[in-house]
Length: 199
Image (cartoon, rainbow, N blue to C red; front, side, top):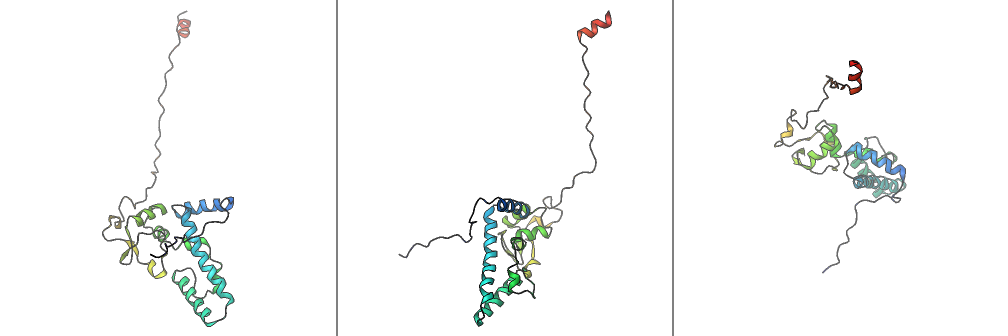
């Protein structure tokens, strides 16, 4: 028997867990992008660090192998629509967390008006109502490439493909104001008032 494989995390957690500014920013990101928990933020941060870390190493190198890796990295980022065709390695270092989050399937489903909210977009994806091209994708964190973006839609069997479906139609508050009349409370005459009138 071989050695038991050591399971390691595919993401790195913050070095200082109790930073007030970072915690406040993470709360905003959680609400804005409808994420389940902070682990999803850390996973996307690790993806970003992988790109920027690779760019930092390749900037200093001048070998043929380094040039090939530079081209491959830039092509990958262009494919994910994170960089333009004219961008260089220095531009990779300017990427931030929100740039990566904008390429998640959950965010793009909401941006394409296929869901009323980011949370609802997550629900549709997990319940396998969303497809990219011909395949169903049930991972909200899937990073969508530029070529795949146009193929995001509902699965043919899904009832949500109908734009008039109750789960897709936006609920608008009624403009008519309903006036609630308060019932008039009749004051009962006290015994003193009744005796006073008789006298």
